[in-house]
Length: 133
Image 1 (cartoon, rainbow, N blue to C red):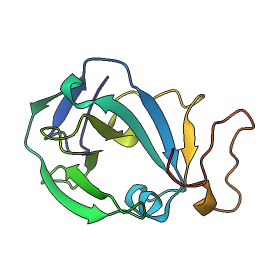
Image 2: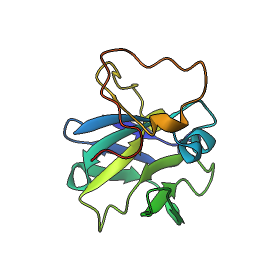
Image 3: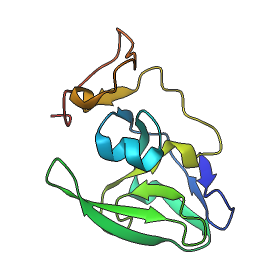
Image 4: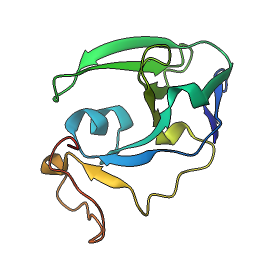
């Protein structure tokens, strides 16, 4: 997998398959993605390589009580991933930053208690009302 920001200043590559794909219906992910949900591709930090550019970051407290480190392009502001590559075992790559969108057929839907009316979750999908156990 490869991806980058909207302006092209930052590029990265992921050298191994995703561990999991989450579709998150929480209010923060909806705000960050400016959509009905956020799409996160979970990968091992060791498998992510920054090819070009530098990232800025900021941190926020999540509804789960955890602190989330958010990394983005300093030029265009595109969010690229959550998680500190130097400290965390996994990163949550923002799905919209990938060059090729991931197949979400088997994606896990989380924070479904916050799902917007009208959003349809497939009957076969694994779902969690909040965070996965």
